[in-house]
Structure formats: C-alpha cells, structure tokens
Image (tube, rainbow, N blue to C red):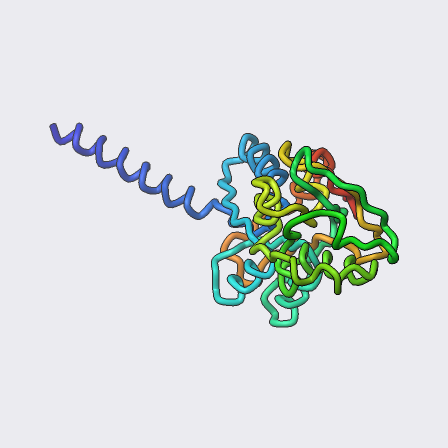
Length: 255
C-alpha cells in the first residue's frame, strides 16, 4: 500500500514539474495584425519540431507597443512600421542589439468582391467620385496601415476630397473585415491582407514613392521572460521566410 502511494506521489510530482517546465518554456509574441496568418503557420511549424509553446497577440502595432509600455508580458515584438519600434526603443523597452528589419509589404486599394471600380493613379483623377460609400483603412493617426494610406492619398492629391469618408479601424484586419462585409465601398490595406481574403478584390497598388517604405522590424522586448534565441532565429530562417513569401511579404534581409 505504502509503495503504491509513494509511486503515485512521485508520478504526481513529475507531472507538476513538467507543467512548470512547460509554463516556463513558452514564448509570447506581440505581432502586427497583418502577420496573423504567416506567424501562425510558422509557429505551428516550429512547435512540431521543438518542445516550446508559442503564444501570439495580434493587433495594431500601436496598440501592442502601448501594451508593452504598460508592462504587458511580451517576449518578442514585431511591428508593421519602424515608428512604433522606435517608440519602444526610445523608452528603452526593447533589446536594441536584437532588432532586425526583415520584411516588406505593399499598400493596395481594395473593394468588395464584384464591386470593383476604375482608378487612375494620377493627381488629376477625382478619386472621391470613383466609388460610393466609405473608405476603410487603419486609424490614420496611429495604425501603420492608416498612416501609410494617408501618405499615399496626400501624395496623389486625393486626401482633401476623401478625408470625410474615411473609417479608421483599430487594425488593418478590422479594415479588411469592413470591406469584406460591404460596409465600406473601398479600403486601403496591405497586399498580404487582401490576398488572404476571397471576399475582396484588389483595384490597384499604390506607388512605393507615395508612402514611406513599409518595413517590419522585430526585436526582443527588454527584460523578456523567455529570451528564446532559437525561435527568434527560426523566424528569420529559410523555412520561415518561405512562409512569409507565400503570403506575399517581401524579404528585406536574408540570413
């Protein structure tokens, strides 16, 4: 009887130790909403090979940066622009030595499937008359996609004619959802977002010179609980870069 109890106690102790070990062997990634599909696939791929649990939080880069500033327990931050990475760097909230700028993207104009319209990428074109309804994008003051969108609209001299019809979503996937449901007649999102939806169509791609370069930097958060260099390197590996490319991201720097 005593032997059985002892055996059971040892098994219980090992189970508890295993749970604790697994809890510690977890990486929390805060990543821009546009990375949702690619990062999910990459993490699933990684977890098949390693005994590490990858947890994600996807949202606007601005939202994630503010959460990190307020003490949210993130290990890795991947932003959709340099602005919010710089914001955390200025506050000494990222590990500067780990910072990598490794992905790029394109900005596109979309419409609900079957409701496309003609557009000329010319400053003389009256964009406000090209479609009916609202124009959805990320919040133009804080969400990277919205900031890029305002830059492009201003460059093309379309801003004044359309600014009162803009709906700023909390992140780029929110803007995509509005267009998918037909609640907005058009939207400005990343090419990678448009490509994962069968409910929208791409009208045109904004010229690269119309906005600041779309760059995705990543870094370890300062004082990260789990500094998993292996996973950080895996995100930049050829296997992971192939996934990013599959979703339409451009690779700025290969390992």
